[in-house]
Length: 102
Image 1 (cartoon, rainbow, N blue to C red):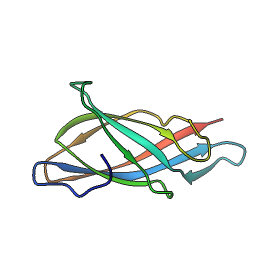
Image 2: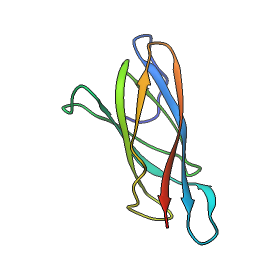
Image 3: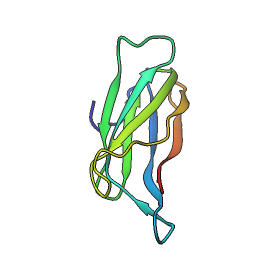
Image 4: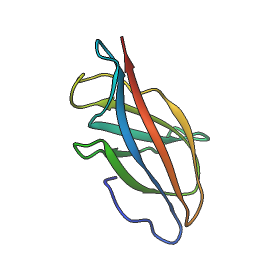
């Protein structure tokens, strides 16, 4: 599922992906492919690719999701820290997603 506006029966998940750590210990935006898997079921998942600045927006049905991802730039294949997010109908949920590396 790509970036889209939410319909009346969905909510919207928006945010940014960042890398954190490394030699200079800077926090920098990073492009990634994210997957939102419903916590109560693993049969359906939703994916979204971020813009080059790490920003994303995706409409999702209400409920709880485990948000995971893989970086597509900087540390290609690097993984984001998984987190739980909760979506409510007609509401926007904002998250910051981090990939931490040594």
